[in-house]
Length: 80
Image 1 (cartoon, rainbow, N blue to C red):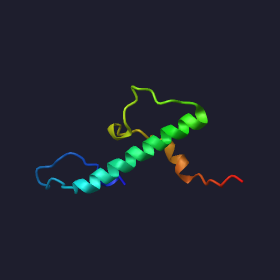
Image 2 (image 1 turned 30 degrees about the horizontal axis):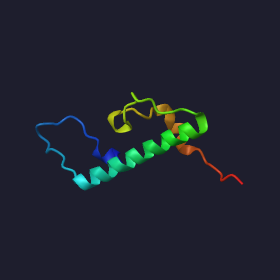
Image 3 (image 1 turned 120 degrees about the vertical axis):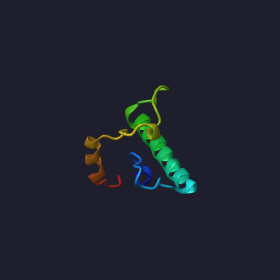
């Protein structure tokens, strides 16, 4: 979603990447929505409220660490 817009150092021999502003805005909205959902779940399940000093996920390049990748493979079953 957002990874396609991450850049790197500009090189003199390469063209500056150009992105569609609507696509960037859509990706930003998806990141914001996912972050809000995560904080909602944290508050609901763990009782953690978001501290006012917590930076937005979009401002943190390592908001999810490599250790968090283990959660990508978790299979959930609907509760009955």
